Length: 267
Figure 1 (cartoon, rainbow, N blue to C red):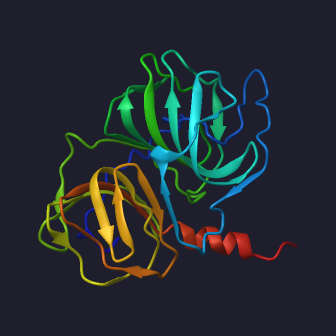
Figure 2 (figure 1 turned 30 degrees about the vertical axis):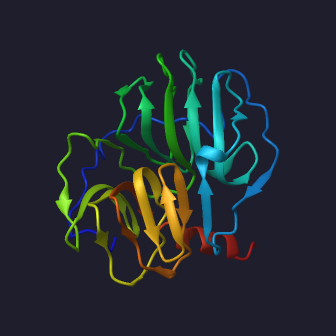
């Protein structure tokens, strides 16, 4: 990933049933058919840098009563590649549904649940392509969700409690890393920056998509408080640092494959 040493995350590849997920863009498979969301192209050009303050965005109703979302990026209608902040009201639930191209979730607040378990704040979940589940929240929750961006060959389900997992020294003093998932070129991790930590000018082989969980993250382009989401294009560069310290969620290596798929000639 560039910030971490060579440490492999824990992957539960034997799990074949759907793991956790909310449903910001996949199709519900049982019972009623979900109403079709208007085709939306929001920050959909993966070759462009995007910066979004999620806390300033309006909430949009989802097809499920009691679930609303703030859209960070989206390309499609009812079935869409999407990144969102999702809020479940107490008692909200989805019918069982399929995640054709997978889903990643970080629980920000409250408790998120499905038939496989209950997941409190700080829990990371990866539902692989082809998995299904019926998510709900008894007390309500707030989630960061990415949909339809995983490699179709990735069959590993991951569940990591970031509050109790082991962190590792990063590549520079003051940087610690918690690997969450990896497959091929794709890597997802939590990265903690101690106050005053800076990184050398970095040429990113892949793409960094940080979601600020706490603190303030900065680079030469600006400063990004908690709730910020950034997408840096493939092979872009910047010089990141944090004066006061921060905790961020980082995903790399997925945009190149997505760009190739978008630009592939149709036959």
